[in-house]
Image 1: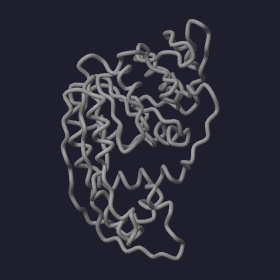
Image 2: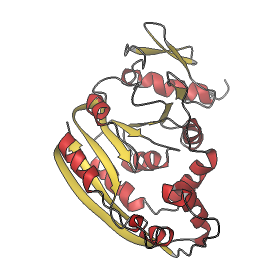
Image 3: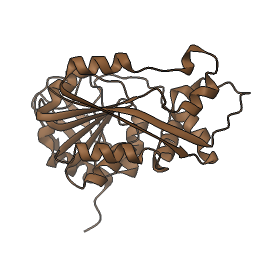
Length: 277
């Protein structure tokens, strides 16, 4: 008997966790049909791609994120500059059987967090198809979904932990998806995040400084039992990673062509916010 196809492997993972899914059109329960589609009782159908991910968008969307951006993001994350942050998240979500990463991009954070915790299943969702295609290519052990949290393809109260790492949030949907006693982990930049880059790109402008006070306050108003931990450290940066760092962060998108950057080190400075419904 030959090896399973990538589609079959992805379909099997989805079938094992089928209770997590709900039709994004009608919210009915779903089943895997012939290893090729997710189908609900009202016969809404979503194809499982040959690469092993499922596209559950209900309408076409455009994404500003390119294949090369996700390649750059993976290179930067693989360099280890977020290792400390990922390790702390792994500890926080250690008991979780089901972990949803919202705005997962190419999946590197989720894959590394799940590998560290050695338990449970990770599900990544992103509106950018290029990111999900990269995720399933590199990390087929998890479930990957192209989808929009505004029309969520997941069932109510189905996740023990929800991750929102340096990404836009949908708090009302997080509350719907979080299981009793589950937690939401949000990572937001602090004032020193990538400060070496900010100082050179935004010198002598209002953007040279940054505050996350409004984001933190909204999170605290939205969830209960909120804790906040600041994680900050500075690491040497390989000069070969500078172009990738510029491509992966919105700060770098506004760089002037004639502006040379010298980055020998980079600072990671974030708040880890943890809350419950």
